[in-house]
Image (tube, rainbow, N blue to C red):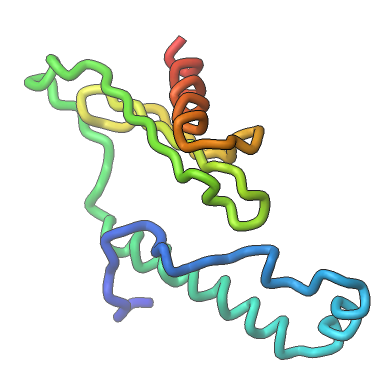
Amino acid sequence: MNNAKPVTIPFAAHFKLSADMSPKIDKEMKHMSSVPYSSAVGSIMYAMAVKWILRYLKGTTDVGLTFDKAKMSDLIVGYVDLDFAGDLDKKRSLTGYLFTLFKSAISWKATLQAIVTLSTIEAEYMALAEAVKKVL
């Protein structure tokens, strides 16, 4: 990893790790448990994901929390986003929020929504409610 090229994002969108990739029925699971190929491929996929994260960390060694007294006007700022039905296994939306104090992150969370929402706007309301609960 010493010679690895740093990347600018923490995780690439092309990594799609899902339980759907696993065998579903007992016969398939029994057969695949005796095949070392599937275990090796699964391990390689996760190793590639970990390598990507390490490359990101290598490129962000100079990043840290700083507080700038000159920019006191932006006291607390909140951001909310979601990935509608982004969970490949359960089809639930991923909610995320971030709060900053003087432009430095102080609170953040990314979690799957507890229920399956039927529309993007319903999922957006759920995400916003989650962030507002944190503020209160």
